[in-house]
Image 1 (tube, chains in turn yellow, brown):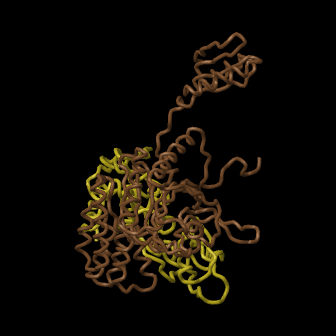
Image 2 (cartoon, chains in turn brown, red):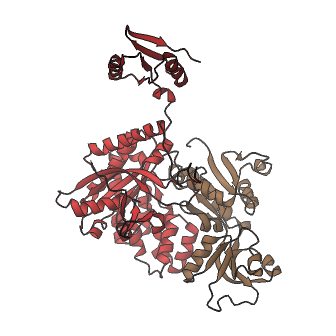
Length: 214
Length: 398
């Protein structure tokens, strides 16, 4: 462990392009990340990068198989537990929202409300805090469909632009929390390889604070 | 076979052969070290009443395995050894002169979520020093923990020190709204600088400076000096002084490279009351040792004495330890005897054992079966005990 370069797990998909740009901007050789072929562990000159699904970033970092990771706050809230969340990277910004079929009053009546979502833990926590007892229904994709088909009274989902909601006749009624990409660090690694981690973190922090990033 | 007839429950596993040997070796080294420092062993039941852990436990109820006893009382699989030991000391050891030093090696159970690579059953080996407050007791615990790493030959292992009182002192200065204090604590524990800054913003700069920097206050001795400059709180300053003295004492004993400070260690602040520490080893992604001072715990059981202790996760050490080569467990001699020669065969067997040979008794009646077995296992030599004496048969490979 000591001798290998720091290994960083990046989230595939929505956050990937910006994360790759980040490492390119701070001086790493990211050509190999762009033309990665079938390689799974990519050496970008002093750092090892793996590209995995969002929830897996957390699993790899928590278990110490990767030292650091870049992952969305939504994934952290949904799955995360024991690691350090040390930087808000400022990209991948969006919001976790509650949305209902346009024109319906979510809070009316005494019937138990049904909430469809991919983020069952976030939804449960949110309604716990509100002191509202609801049914949570896990939906894997196109959550917007659930209220339209009468499966749920509301959805809790990530909203970037709101276009999908609008096109499907839904409207946002509440914000659960703002989201963005975060830099996370394995707890043991933070202590055992402190200097390397902090050096890289400082570079990334400068990148986050760069004028064109604001 | 039934549906789950071939598996073990989530988070549990079988340990086989060499794994057991390595685990035993780790436990033996730790037990010997603790024993040599005057810590005597206790064993507590595998199940305890839920009430014991409902009082002061740092373990949330959803992480405990629960059962009902006949009669309907709620019991849990032991999730931790410190509370049962507090119960034992408070109920059955009150006559013992203080301090009492106890050690244990036993399994604890945590109902973690499935499929995340976590263990739900782990062996912990640890010590508790009960009835002693102050620096000397804290030093003893830390030196014992460092000694444990040394006894196990773990180079590069690190222990980091923190103190929940520092955090509590800083928090007491700011009139947080309901629930905000827990948000702040979480941000500090997970080093979430950004979110912490957002919460503290509205309370102004001067009072919150140290609190806001808390996640960054980890590293070597310089951390204490940095923290000192950030706060005017007298209690906080007193704690920094205490940690400085403690750190200095450990450095004086040659542990400078093995000890660090993290003032942002704020886990279980309602359980710990003073010094907290954690140990890390290279090759393991999480803490292998956790400990601290919990002066309020024993009074929950009606015996108001200070106490401190730590536990080492043996399974994690096992994962990090190098597998022994199989060669070391292969017998060197197989003893085969002809009918009527059992007595002589077992005499020979005992002699070879006393010479520290690895030896195995054949249960086959026919020599060709013994030879085939020796070949399959890789035993190089058969001692054939017959009416005419003992003959050595060498087994060629393949």
